[in-house]
Length: 445
Length: 143
Image 1: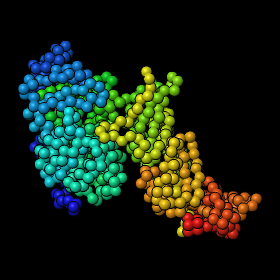
Image 2 (image 1 turned 120 degrees about the vertical axis):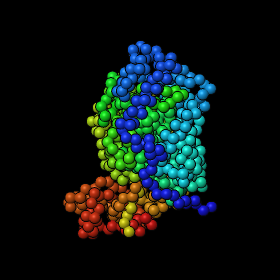
Image 3 (image 1 turned 180 degrees about the horizontal axis):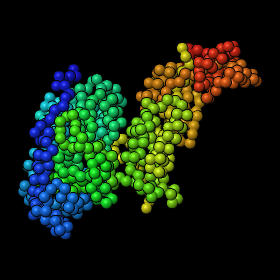
Image 4 (image 1 turned 60 degrees about the vertical axis):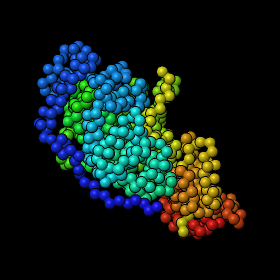
């Protein structure tokens, strides 16, 4: 069968909803305030937890007069959703809920979220925005490798891609060789999934002897786990695509909270639907723009399960400098780590992202690594296992010794911990099909 | 044709050496000489093979990190002092040797020493000037 090579419009900046996405800031802020006031009123009337919290904080819905007043509201955290399992935070009766999703539960009990018909429509539109911003049009064939099911990734991107009018292939995750064959046979032009799985697909493709020329892919839209510039470049080179990142979390909605445009200078937050703050995760105090801290989101339009000041545990920073794409929404930096990923090694707080950054800076190290925490006697140890790929191996012992030394020294100066560095063979670190697991903690407490 | 050495990165794990040699065998690649440099966790397997191009393909397909390096192969008299005289002339010229290993050629009379220097071109010049017999790639790979 001849490969399907399709004529597609050139990649260029497009907007899905120009009126909303380029709304002047003052108008946007007025809209945000109106929606914030309505949300606070609604949860106060309908969600017992919020009524109690607001009452004990001494805040009445009428006290929210400016956007800054959001800081008077109590935080919501994942444990609140767990305690309310399954439907305790729903603000509408179940008859008005037409879809239920739940978080993957990798970090504990799953959290359950419900969507009204209007929520689903908004969700589709917000995902359509990020797909459009990443170059997808109705002419594209969109291959979705996110898992379908309770996880919001599969259905979220699916609805958005249908909303755009693209041809959607709901492949779901797993059976990577089959994914490669389907992309080739069905002429997929856009790949959607996690960045680590995209890399796995690319590697499998090469192992199968399939060259990127045999595919029709042109863009990739990746999310659901932290990424990095190096990982992006590698995926782009291997699949010969242009890749954008997007962000979301099931508690708040799923994918569609924010996404990059083709300028790729941060992820535009859909601020007409979410109010974003950055806080110091230790003290809860709001940080000025540009500071890295925990992202806190308040939903502005959700009916099923509106959330006030939801602590995402994701570390990022905000940027309101103008973007050439014309969107007026502020941008968040790619997530730099999670407050709950924090490792405590010999009493020192270390984020996996810090170590990842070191590895990425050291030229040539492919982002395949694993952190192993263990204990020798009473002392914590950190082992960094790094794959020696054909690209970085130049055949000299001195080169490898130098690489080990560089990683050890840079991690030492960055994190204050001297790791043991182990160089391992290519592909000896387990590849993920879903979210990347970078840390193995063998310590017994 | 230059003399080419294949270096393979190997973790110190059971069976990896068998995996490498079998991958080469399946491609019909013959190993002329081999040497291992090792640390506690990993080692470098250095090989002189009958067909470096095939060898690299076989290793890449089997998922190994391998690279190709130019080395010098010199013929050494099989008598006391045979190797010493060669190394002396390099030392006198101020050329460092990173590593070397030896094997016996087809004739069985002379030893062949594979050596890697940080400056291959200068080492070659010095050896030629001292009338040391340097083998070509054809001679070494197709022994």
